[in-house]
Image (cartoon, rainbow, N blue to C red):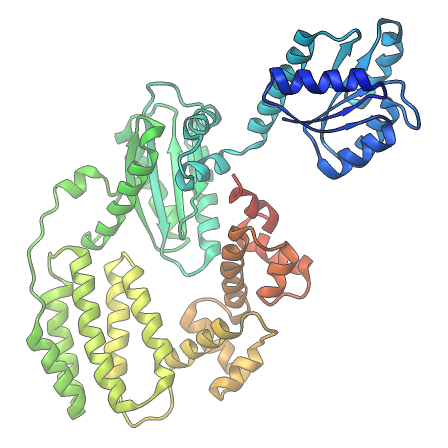
Length: 505
């Protein structure tokens, strides 16, 4: 702890300093001879503890403590007093004085008082840290103090020593950040409704992932059945998602278990119907090796050059049957498909000479790699195929192309005062038509998408800890910090300052 000593008698002041430096690990950051000087030091240094005499020139100890409290500074106060002053010192209780030291001072008394304060501060600090912050620290920390954090987290979630925790990992497939918030509320209401007494829901520091930890000792088979028969249906109403299951015996294995559950999610691509993916399901999967069909790539490139639309689609359908609908591992299917799509796109791009199509390429390919649902993957695959099979000489962009150019415009100009009219001018249509087109293609209006995008950038800036809130607001295009706070809270469910605190654990 950092300590300030305020005592007008030099021998007493120096004696306390020597005792603290010799017999404890605490640091004396200042020693002053009167209340005014002591207050200035506390104001600038914000120590953990201030030890002060009562009777001092210029400003007495009680007046100094009162002034410290009025300034809103949180620091423990220890009062030095003699037996004759003790009754007078009772007034200090109103000022939240932590402890008393009676003169003449004793080494053991000083050590004991500082030890008591340190334990109180440690306990208060632990109580103020939320379970979400502790979990974030366990998942992203460097391993220092991990045992202490595990202990605090176990206390927060009331985990018993040999208790096994049931965990469900949900990953939203929606582009909307708010969908994750809605799913979180659905989970809470559903688990409340079945009267589970020990469940905890966390939004993870990964993209659109929610972790449910259940500690009330229910049978895992019962919990999986509840999720399958009831909760999955309610979540589905909010948007597409993936879900996996795992069990945790010791918090030491939290990272590994969660990493395994995240790996389970990649196998959702294999199953025709949505299900809770666990170790048993993955263990029973079998895969068939599928070589990349070079002949189909050559065929689709030839048909693109010849302008043979039917040939392009025929080769694409054959690729779907051979690769996408095969029983190959999901990551191999995705890699093969992206390779095939890139070959088609590069051939079409060489002929179209249209730089505007780059944003669409990037968006669709990224979306294909991210999705874990085969139906969505196929939909994006055919969007690309339909695009390259279209008339190469046509100058106008497709509806998707327009929207992706608008998205690229937002990416490049989010920090400026951009508007729907600016974006409409870019693609040469009216703001009213762009608004309808954007909402139809993206499932979200222009202003909401702009806010979501700005907040996604703001989250990264806040996580660095290098910028003040108003600086982050300006960097993502908000001149009014209050409005930025409002938008951030509506999307993330917490204020920017609270979000940043999580990254400081």
